[in-house]
Amino acid sequence: MRTPIAYFVVLSGVLFTLGTLGVLLRKNALLIFMSVELQLNAVNLALVAFSRMHLALDGQVLAFFSMVVAAAEVVVGLAIIVAVYRRRGTVDVDEARGLAG
Amino acid sequence: MPLDNVVFWVFAPISVASAVGMLLMRNAVHAALFLVVNFFCLAVFFLILDAPFLFAVQIIVYAGAIMVLFLFVIMLLGVDRGDDLRERLVAQRPLALALAAGFVIEIALAVRTGIGFATKAPAGFEAVNDPGNAQAVAKVLFRDYFLPFEVTSVLLIIAAIATMVLGQRKARAVTQAELEAIETTGP
Image (cartoon, rainbow over all chains, first blue to last red; front, side, top):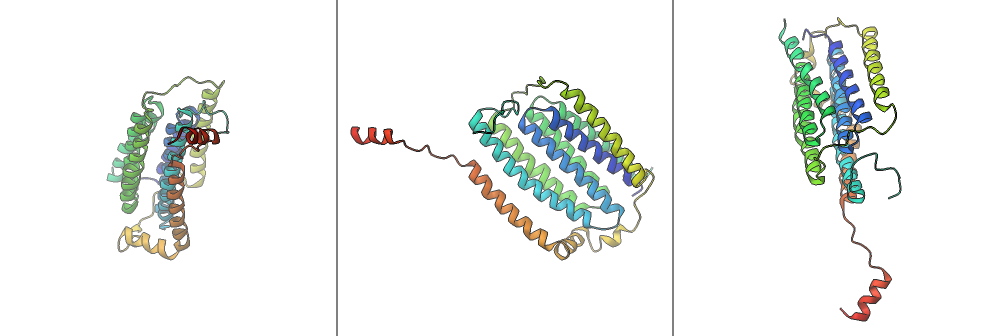
């Protein structure tokens, strides 16, 4: 391992920022959701890099937990998107102006 | 040049380019496929960071299960027609790009002051990973993080139930007038 750890952390920051841009710029709820997944993955990369730097496995375990939570979150989030699509006929977030069903 | 350095500089541009591609694709299916590329690149980074267990989990859970679920929902909803990319909010795009630039600069500065750009990972991770990465992770997981592990299983059950509740299509209730109409006309 001769690559400096900082490179991985900066790369993780860049990917997280691209995910943030996706959330801010896209209209399709599915694409916003994919951008959130990108953010979660970027943070996982930082966790594993720091785990390598500190010679401890706690970072890897935390990344593992975040993957499990992301899986649960995807399942519920996609179910919500499907429910919204059934009710409104679109997944464009600009169309969803009201909270009332 | 050491091998892991080569791997990093090959896969880092691919991961950033695939993330940008996901951001710019109008078609949701293409965006999802770019995201799969990005997940594979991150799996490779896990491998050169001496985390082969997370490498396998990343490919199986993210690139396998989660992305298949995404593609399934995209096909199910038929929203692969292409997105309306016109922006309706004033100055949303410039503000978002400025925020992103500031965020990247801030992270770079924080990393420089925090750990420095030259800090190499210390040797000796083989001792931490002894006898193997999966065994070592399991040891930490089931000794130090056992309660969070059990809470996670509860979370997964709740997520499964929530999805079933959200996904079920309720039968429409029969109104009183319809009931009377049925009774007068006969079955």
